Length: 499
Image (cartoon, rainbow, N blue to C red):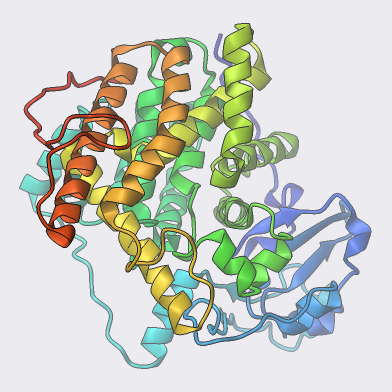
């Protein structure tokens, strides 16, 4: 049975100190509160990305330490190395609120002012304004025809051929906000968890804003696409009948925030450039930790879960992190081997909370890399976008005489060979196990699209090779033996999350 939350509204400071709530940025927890000393109140207003300490609950909280070399050195971190790379040379500034009049002591005001910390994206926007560069003003009022078409698309949000690019255009670039809000309402989670609509709207707007729109791939449209795929997987019969309302809420929030504030470069790039995030997270799931802490920061700033008991909200934040951390591609084999072992032993029990959480992790992993399993017209667009982002990183690495990361050299790679390798070694093994777990029409639809897409990329690769090397005899795809040709004459039945 579903348990409906009928909870008294608790004071916000039961969850987070008031002086922390006004900050923008990622909050994370330390099991050892002694690591951080209590800050001097007189220095609090001078910090950028300061470390804060709450003596009431002895829990150390730290905000993203963006650009504050002095603060990082106090906790044993080396100053970040600056270069001309756009994500390394930025001096991550903050917006200052007006200080309280005639008060410099921490004890003089329980609501003392602190700085707001900007994400990468917000800093870039604010810096443009400071330099007098006009921003594009979005249209806030959509034509009724467009909103009507968007509503019609939402009626089929559970179908696998859902065109997120069209939906993003129809919603004027607000696909992530619109889609996530629709799904939360469709599941009845807003009412069940008594979510404040203003806080929810503010949270979703901030989430969408913190995705970098100038990233070719890791942007808000990708987050919306993953959220839609996650919904399809959660609608599969084996999950739909077992997931609790809390599971579903966490699954949707994790999908929407899984790449939050992504800088458009990968973890090896951050490590070899001594980026502060790599130092902060000790080169371990650097981006995923950052996405999680950024999401928690927005949850706390908006107070979306502030009405829940403190223990419940902390548990939800930790489980949200567990889901987002599972998307680390470097840990793919760990999760895949565990999933395969469960399936071989047939011991997955959906009534077990830890097993359900693991299945949510696997569903999110599938949703995150499901582009090769979409229809060709959608899959090809995503493939070009992710390759563009890889090549942009490679160009930066060449410019600064760094070792070029694998698949990031545009002179050595093409979209075709990158996609064939990705499907062969990453996507196929994962979705083969998912199909074993959920042997449904949707699973077979995805596998069918992947096979056709791989054959099409193989045909394009051979065509490119023949143009470069001269005429050659027709053959078969060296990757999987598929016959030459990229015809889309075969029709794949469209699986649905509702089937």
